[in-house]
Amino acid sequence: MRIAITGGTGFIGQALVQALVARGDEVIVLTRAIPQATKQQDHVSYLTWEEAADPVRLGTLDAIVNLAGETISRRWTTEGKQQILHSRLQAASNVAAIAAAQPVRPHVVVNASGISVYGSTDERIVDESSPPGQDFLSDVVVQWEAAADRIPADRIVKLRTGVVLDAAGKAFSLMALPYKLFVGGKVGSGKQWLSWIHREDMVRLILFSLDHEQLSGPINACAPQPVTNDEFGRALGKAYHRPHWLPVPAFAFRILFGEMSSLLLEGQRALPKQATQAGFVFRYPAIHEALAAIAQKQ
Image 1 (cartoon, one colour):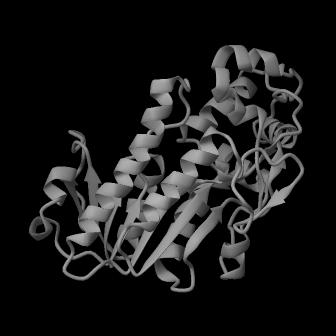
Image 2 (cartoon, one colour):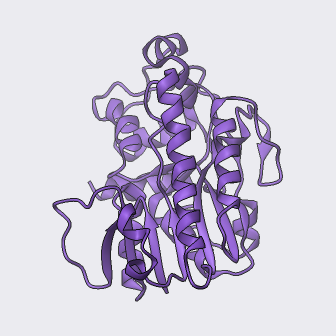
Image 3 (cartoon, helix red, strand yellow):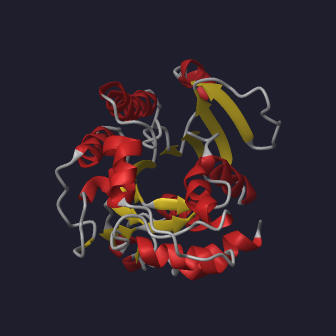
Protein backbone atom coordinates (compact mmCIF):
# COMPACT_ATOMS: atom_id res chain seq x y z
CA MET A 1 0.00 0.00 0.00
CA ARG A 2 0.91 3.65 -0.38
CA ILE A 3 0.34 5.24 3.03
CA ALA A 4 0.68 8.81 4.32
CA ILE A 5 1.48 9.25 8.02
CA THR A 6 1.12 12.40 10.10
CA GLY A 7 3.17 12.40 13.28
CA GLY A 8 5.55 9.99 11.57
CA THR A 9 8.60 11.49 13.30
CA GLY A 10 7.16 10.89 16.78
CA PHE A 11 7.45 8.09 19.31
CA ILE A 12 4.83 5.81 17.72
CA GLY A 13 5.25 7.16 14.21
CA GLN A 14 8.92 6.25 13.88
CA ALA A 15 8.25 2.63 14.85
CA LEU A 16 5.25 2.50 12.51
CA VAL A 17 7.28 3.79 9.56
CA GLN A 18 9.87 1.05 10.07
CA ALA A 19 7.18 -1.64 10.34
CA LEU A 20 5.45 -0.50 7.15
CA VAL A 21 8.69 -0.37 5.19
CA ALA A 22 9.67 -3.80 6.50
CA ARG A 23 6.54 -5.31 5.01
CA GLY A 24 6.94 -3.54 1.66
CA ASP A 25 4.64 -0.52 1.89
CA GLU A 26 5.52 2.91 0.51
CA VAL A 27 5.39 5.61 3.20
CA ILE A 28 4.98 9.38 2.90
CA VAL A 29 5.58 11.20 6.19
CA LEU A 30 3.67 14.48 6.43
CA THR A 31 5.22 16.97 8.84
CA ARG A 32 5.29 20.68 9.65
CA ALA A 33 9.04 20.80 9.00
CA ILE A 34 11.26 18.08 7.59
CA PRO A 35 13.91 17.17 10.23
CA GLN A 36 17.47 18.01 9.25
CA ALA A 37 18.71 14.67 10.58
CA THR A 38 16.30 12.65 8.43
CA LYS A 39 18.13 9.82 6.72
CA GLN A 40 17.33 8.69 3.22
CA GLN A 41 15.40 5.43 3.33
CA ASP A 42 14.05 3.32 0.54
CA HIS A 43 10.26 3.56 0.25
CA VAL A 44 10.08 6.56 2.63
CA SER A 45 9.64 10.18 1.59
CA TYR A 46 8.88 13.37 3.53
CA LEU A 47 6.56 16.24 2.61
CA THR A 48 5.54 19.34 4.50
CA TRP A 49 1.81 20.01 4.91
CA GLU A 50 2.09 22.75 2.28
CA GLU A 51 3.72 20.37 -0.20
CA ALA A 52 1.16 17.66 0.53
CA ALA A 53 -1.66 20.08 -0.34
CA ASP A 54 -0.64 19.60 -3.98
CA PRO A 55 -2.34 16.32 -5.00
CA VAL A 56 0.02 15.90 -7.93
CA ARG A 57 3.07 16.07 -5.68
CA LEU A 58 1.49 13.85 -3.03
CA GLY A 59 0.23 11.22 -5.45
CA THR A 60 -2.52 8.67 -4.91
CA LEU A 61 -2.90 7.24 -1.42
CA ASP A 62 -4.38 3.93 -0.31
CA ALA A 63 -4.46 4.90 3.36
CA ILE A 64 -3.69 7.65 5.85
CA VAL A 65 -2.58 7.25 9.47
CA ASN A 66 -3.10 10.41 11.51
CA LEU A 67 -1.02 10.48 14.71
CA ALA A 68 -0.61 14.26 14.96
CA GLY A 69 -1.46 16.22 18.11
CA GLU A 70 0.19 18.24 20.88
CA THR A 71 1.21 16.30 23.97
CA ILE A 72 -1.23 16.31 26.89
CA SER A 73 1.71 16.05 29.34
CA ARG A 74 1.89 19.79 29.93
CA ARG A 75 0.35 22.38 32.24
CA TRP A 76 -3.36 22.62 31.49
CA THR A 77 -3.55 26.38 31.39
CA THR A 78 -6.28 27.95 29.29
CA GLU A 79 -3.78 28.37 26.46
CA GLY A 80 -2.45 24.84 26.92
CA LYS A 81 -5.92 23.35 26.72
CA GLN A 82 -6.65 25.30 23.56
CA GLN A 83 -3.45 24.01 21.94
CA ILE A 84 -4.24 20.40 22.92
CA LEU A 85 -7.68 20.62 21.31
CA HIS A 86 -6.79 22.82 18.34
CA SER A 87 -3.81 20.69 17.28
CA ARG A 88 -6.03 17.61 17.02
CA LEU A 89 -8.88 19.32 15.22
CA GLN A 90 -6.50 21.05 12.82
CA ALA A 91 -4.67 17.82 11.99
CA ALA A 92 -7.96 16.04 11.26
CA SER A 93 -9.07 19.00 9.12
CA ASN A 94 -5.79 18.89 7.16
CA VAL A 95 -6.16 15.16 6.59
CA ALA A 96 -9.75 15.69 5.43
CA ALA A 97 -8.58 18.26 2.88
CA ILE A 98 -5.87 15.91 1.60
CA ALA A 99 -8.31 12.99 1.35
CA ALA A 100 -10.88 15.16 -0.45
CA ALA A 101 -8.29 16.18 -3.05
CA GLN A 102 -7.47 12.57 -3.93
CA PRO A 103 -8.75 11.30 -7.31
CA VAL A 104 -10.18 8.31 -5.45
CA ARG A 105 -10.78 8.64 -1.73
CA PRO A 106 -8.48 6.56 0.52
CA HIS A 107 -9.60 3.04 1.43
CA VAL A 108 -8.96 3.62 5.13
CA VAL A 109 -7.96 6.33 7.58
CA VAL A 110 -6.60 5.29 10.98
CA ASN A 111 -6.92 8.26 13.32
CA ALA A 112 -5.37 8.46 16.78
CA SER A 113 -7.76 8.94 19.68
CA GLY A 114 -7.59 8.50 23.45
CA ILE A 115 -8.75 6.08 26.11
CA SER A 116 -9.42 9.17 28.23
CA VAL A 117 -12.71 9.58 26.36
CA TYR A 118 -14.33 7.49 29.12
CA GLY A 119 -13.29 9.83 31.94
CA SER A 120 -12.39 8.40 35.33
CA THR A 121 -14.01 4.95 35.55
CA ASP A 122 -13.03 3.88 39.08
CA GLU A 123 -13.79 0.12 39.24
CA ARG A 124 -16.18 0.25 36.29
CA ILE A 125 -15.03 -1.68 33.20
CA VAL A 126 -15.55 0.11 29.88
CA ASP A 127 -15.36 -0.90 26.23
CA GLU A 128 -16.05 0.84 22.93
CA SER A 129 -19.82 0.88 23.58
CA SER A 130 -19.44 2.84 26.84
CA PRO A 131 -20.49 6.52 26.94
CA PRO A 132 -17.96 9.34 27.18
CA GLY A 133 -17.05 11.03 30.42
CA GLN A 134 -17.61 14.66 31.37
CA ASP A 135 -14.12 16.08 31.93
CA PHE A 136 -11.69 18.09 29.78
CA LEU A 137 -9.95 15.19 28.02
CA SER A 138 -13.23 13.38 27.43
CA ASP A 139 -14.54 16.46 25.62
CA VAL A 140 -11.31 16.76 23.61
CA VAL A 141 -11.61 13.17 22.40
CA VAL A 142 -15.30 13.54 21.53
CA GLN A 143 -14.53 16.56 19.34
CA TRP A 144 -11.41 14.87 17.92
CA GLU A 145 -13.34 11.78 16.86
CA ALA A 146 -16.12 13.90 15.37
CA ALA A 147 -13.50 15.70 13.26
CA ALA A 148 -12.06 12.33 12.17
CA ASP A 149 -15.51 11.18 11.09
CA ARG A 150 -15.59 14.07 8.60
CA ILE A 151 -12.56 12.73 6.71
CA PRO A 152 -13.72 11.33 3.36
CA ALA A 153 -12.60 7.69 3.33
CA ASP A 154 -14.18 4.29 2.76
CA ARG A 155 -13.41 3.28 6.33
CA ILE A 156 -12.36 5.22 9.43
CA VAL A 157 -10.75 3.60 12.48
CA LYS A 158 -10.33 5.65 15.66
CA LEU A 159 -7.73 4.07 17.92
CA ARG A 160 -8.42 5.03 21.53
CA THR A 161 -4.89 4.69 22.79
CA GLY A 162 -3.88 3.90 26.36
CA VAL A 163 -0.47 4.69 27.85
CA VAL A 164 2.08 3.42 25.31
CA LEU A 165 5.01 1.70 27.02
CA ASP A 166 8.53 1.50 25.64
CA ALA A 167 11.96 2.55 26.88
CA ALA A 168 12.08 5.24 24.17
CA GLY A 169 8.87 6.87 25.38
CA LYS A 170 8.86 10.01 27.50
CA ALA A 171 5.91 8.84 29.60
CA PHE A 172 7.55 5.54 30.48
CA SER A 173 10.89 7.20 31.23
CA LEU A 174 9.19 9.48 33.77
CA MET A 175 7.30 6.55 35.32
CA ALA A 176 10.44 4.43 35.59
CA LEU A 177 12.80 7.16 36.89
CA PRO A 178 11.79 6.96 40.60
CA TYR A 179 12.37 3.20 40.56
CA LYS A 180 15.78 3.60 38.96
CA LEU A 181 16.57 6.01 41.82
CA PHE A 182 15.27 3.50 44.41
CA VAL A 183 12.37 5.77 45.46
CA GLY A 184 9.49 4.19 43.52
CA GLY A 185 6.05 3.68 45.01
CA LYS A 186 2.34 4.06 44.40
CA VAL A 187 0.88 7.42 43.43
CA GLY A 188 -2.04 8.62 45.52
CA SER A 189 -4.25 5.74 46.59
CA GLY A 190 -2.65 3.41 44.03
CA LYS A 191 -6.14 2.11 43.22
CA GLN A 192 -6.59 4.16 40.03
CA TRP A 193 -6.60 2.05 36.86
CA LEU A 194 -4.06 2.19 34.05
CA SER A 195 -4.99 1.07 30.54
CA TRP A 196 -1.70 0.51 28.77
CA ILE A 197 -0.21 -1.02 25.61
CA HIS A 198 3.33 -1.98 24.61
CA ARG A 199 4.58 0.09 21.66
CA GLU A 200 5.14 -3.07 19.63
CA ASP A 201 1.49 -4.05 20.05
CA MET A 202 0.42 -0.49 19.28
CA VAL A 203 2.20 -0.62 15.93
CA ARG A 204 0.86 -4.11 15.23
CA LEU A 205 -2.69 -2.93 15.96
CA ILE A 206 -2.32 -0.03 13.52
CA LEU A 207 -1.20 -2.49 10.83
CA PHE A 208 -4.10 -4.78 11.76
CA SER A 209 -6.51 -1.85 11.44
CA LEU A 210 -5.15 -0.96 8.01
CA ASP A 211 -5.53 -4.53 6.75
CA HIS A 212 -8.82 -5.75 8.25
CA GLU A 213 -11.90 -4.44 6.49
CA GLN A 214 -14.22 -5.43 9.35
CA LEU A 215 -12.63 -2.91 11.71
CA SER A 216 -14.11 0.59 11.80
CA GLY A 217 -15.19 3.17 14.34
CA PRO A 218 -13.66 3.40 17.82
CA ILE A 219 -11.17 0.69 18.82
CA ASN A 220 -9.61 0.56 22.28
CA ALA A 221 -5.85 0.35 21.77
CA CYS A 222 -4.96 -1.08 25.16
CA ALA A 223 -3.86 -4.45 26.52
CA PRO A 224 -6.56 -6.88 27.71
CA GLN A 225 -5.26 -6.75 31.29
CA PRO A 226 -5.41 -3.21 32.73
CA VAL A 227 -3.73 -2.76 36.11
CA THR A 228 -3.98 -0.45 39.07
CA ASN A 229 -1.26 2.10 39.69
CA ASP A 230 -0.03 0.02 42.62
CA GLU A 231 0.11 -3.17 40.52
CA PHE A 232 1.97 -1.31 37.77
CA GLY A 233 4.52 0.01 40.25
CA ARG A 234 5.13 -3.42 41.75
CA ALA A 235 5.65 -4.93 38.29
CA LEU A 236 7.98 -2.07 37.34
CA GLY A 237 10.03 -2.53 40.49
CA LYS A 238 10.31 -6.25 39.83
CA ALA A 239 11.38 -5.73 36.21
CA TYR A 240 14.18 -3.36 37.27
CA HIS A 241 15.02 -5.14 40.54
CA ARG A 242 14.09 -2.09 42.57
CA PRO A 243 11.90 -1.64 45.66
CA HIS A 244 8.31 -0.43 45.53
CA TRP A 245 8.00 1.36 48.82
CA LEU A 246 7.77 5.16 48.80
CA PRO A 247 4.21 6.42 48.15
CA VAL A 248 3.64 9.86 46.63
CA PRO A 249 0.62 11.63 48.19
CA ALA A 250 -2.06 12.87 45.81
CA PHE A 251 -1.88 16.45 47.10
CA ALA A 252 1.77 16.70 46.04
CA PHE A 253 0.86 15.89 42.44
CA ARG A 254 -2.02 18.36 42.51
CA ILE A 255 0.31 21.11 43.73
CA LEU A 256 2.97 20.30 41.14
CA PHE A 257 0.79 19.68 38.08
CA GLY A 258 -2.58 21.24 38.78
CA GLU A 259 -5.46 19.82 36.74
CA MET A 260 -3.07 17.69 34.69
CA SER A 261 -2.47 15.58 37.81
CA SER A 262 -5.70 13.74 36.91
CA LEU A 263 -3.65 11.80 34.34
CA LEU A 264 -1.99 9.91 37.21
CA LEU A 265 -4.56 10.22 39.99
CA GLU A 266 -7.51 9.03 37.90
CA GLY A 267 -7.72 6.38 35.21
CA GLN A 268 -9.67 4.09 32.94
CA ARG A 269 -10.29 0.36 33.26
CA ALA A 270 -10.80 -0.31 29.55
CA LEU A 271 -10.88 -3.53 27.55
CA PRO A 272 -10.03 -3.91 23.82
CA LYS A 273 -13.30 -5.66 22.95
CA GLN A 274 -13.42 -4.75 19.25
CA ALA A 275 -9.79 -5.66 18.52
CA THR A 276 -9.92 -9.04 20.24
CA GLN A 277 -13.25 -9.93 18.65
CA ALA A 278 -11.70 -9.17 15.24
CA GLY A 279 -8.91 -11.64 15.97
CA PHE A 280 -6.06 -9.39 17.09
CA VAL A 281 -3.67 -11.22 19.43
CA PHE A 282 -1.57 -9.14 21.82
CA ARG A 283 2.09 -10.04 22.04
CA TYR A 284 2.21 -8.47 25.50
CA PRO A 285 -1.19 -9.00 27.18
CA ALA A 286 0.16 -8.81 30.76
CA ILE A 287 2.08 -5.96 32.37
CA HIS A 288 4.89 -8.11 33.79
CA GLU A 289 5.65 -9.46 30.29
CA ALA A 290 5.71 -6.00 28.77
CA LEU A 291 7.92 -4.45 31.44
CA ALA A 292 10.33 -7.41 31.47
CA ALA A 293 10.77 -7.04 27.69
CA ILE A 294 11.41 -3.30 28.03
CA ALA A 295 13.89 -3.74 30.88
CA GLN A 296 15.85 -6.36 28.93
CA LYS A 297 16.51 -3.85 26.15
CA GLN A 298 18.13 -1.33 28.50
